[in-house]
Amino acid sequence: MAKEDLADSAKDQVLPALQHGEQAVVVSAKVLEKKTRPPARYTEGLLIEDMKNAGKYVEDTTLRAVLKEVSGLGTSATRDSILETLKTHQYLGVSGKYLIPTEKGEALIRWLELHCSELADVALTARWEAQLDIIAARGGGAQFEAEIASKVREIVTTLRQAAPIPRAASENKSMNNETTGERRASKPTPKMLEFAQRIALKLGHKLPPETVDDFEKTRAYIDANLAAANKPTDKQLKFATSIAERKSATIPADALADGRALSKWIDDNKG
Image (cartoon, rainbow, N blue to C red; front, side, top):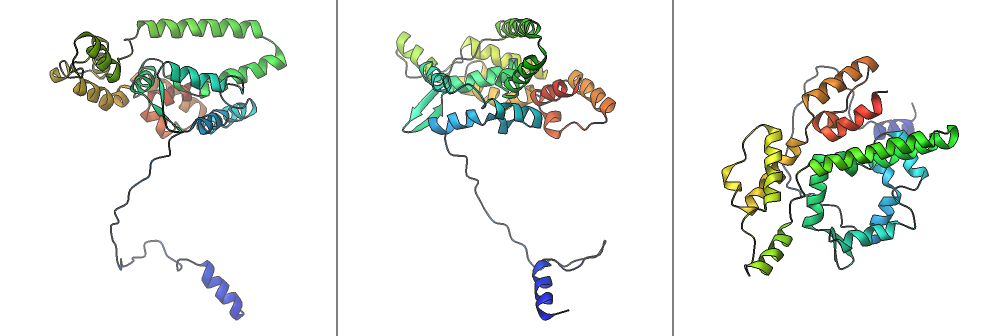
């Protein structure tokens, strides 16, 4: 072998040849203290760009392709108005050039994830767009329209029966200032308390008594337990397992840990 070939071979081989079961000696080890950097906040331009490319947040390759074809969420004529509506109703705030989520906006997302998670899932748009593509090729628009109307009625019924959205701390503060002149709200609102009680009921335990009279403790309880409340039910897991066995498929780990993701997996695989 030429000298140049030996040099190239040595450069390509990062580790020496190893045998199974061979022991090695640890020469050194050290722990490094690092910090992760959170993603930068959205500007309006970046958020609109992400709405156009919303398919990247969908795992299913077919649905991802559908969203790419229709240019994501909304249209060029509606995306700006969507953001303005969110700002007008105080679901989004503005700090300099950046958009910031408000307490009211975060409360809405938590509420939707608990009571109707599919409305917070970009894949819902992709599934409907995929059905529209089928209609364009084969017909069946009237049936699709009836199914959508039925689905909307079902969602509206579900949300009407759900506990109301907890009032944000800033709204409580404003209400207190207007009615009593106090600087802050110390107790949770009845709606917020009811929301926390529904989470406790779903988890099968009693709401801690200290949350009843303390706004911050109630909010901390909701934040700490919402993810657990969203875990798949035994019924979901049993149904998903039967689908996986029938189709010789593997249920993704994230779906086994999140009821919303498992619901989506079931919808995508039950056919």
